[in-house]
Amino acid sequence: MSETKFFTAGKLRASENSTGVTTVYFCNPEKLNAFDLEMTEQAERLHQELLWRKPRVVVFRGEGRAFSAGGDLDLLLWLTEQEKSQSKKTMRRLYDAFLNLARLDCPTIAMLNGPAVGAGFCFALACDMRYTFHENKLGLNFVKIGLAPGMAAEYFGLKTMGRGKLTEMIATGHIYFAWELANYSIFEGLFPLEQLEEQVYDIAVQIAGNSQKAIAFSLQQIRNPLGDLASSLDQQAESQAECFIAGEMAEAIAAQREKRTFRFSV
Image 1: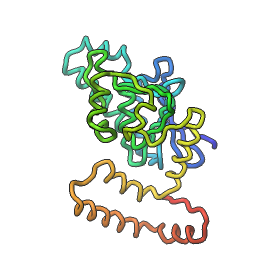
Image 2: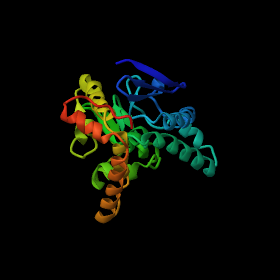
Image 3: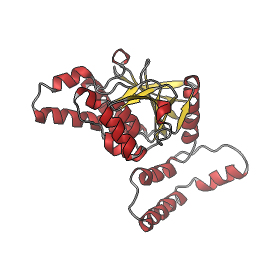
């Protein structure tokens, strides 16, 4: 599949392939793709670019042997020398820059092609789907350096695993093999490393071929479920009514009946 690069800025790169799948690469392999202020600024710019481009699905992956080692240690050490108000402002900017990428108006996939720890693993938890290989190393090791968790570790962790396992991961700071976490609903798939890329992009291509309007409506409820059944049903009726008037359902149904491929424009 041919790829077209549309964003290159030092530590982040983004491209779209011929199937409509967008890929974002963390490109700081010398530091295991750790997040720093330079990458934060680039993430803010990439977010604006993606809002304009309206991707169908985004796959995040790391360049080199890691997905992301989390917060850059030199940045963390610099923050120990700053006033509390400055360190809080800096970390909130970093959180927002990366979590905005994970929470786009389309499905987001974290392809953990190498170790993901600390804020790097938190970023993966914030994505809609996660895939990795059995022997990959993962963890929430903040407390090992005397740091409370950041990047909404608890918020997204409770959405993807039980309270007990999340508490164990945070309180011990242990680094796990992915297969040790297989029973905790964290991953949508664990594959052999040599099959990981093929499997993830097969799923992403399927997503890219479907109605983006319909998916976006569903993502709203998946990410922020309404509190009661009646409210949920009312929102679904509203969403389906919007789909009825979007103008593509009749052609999509005809294509399904005729067993031919149909590509949605929205």
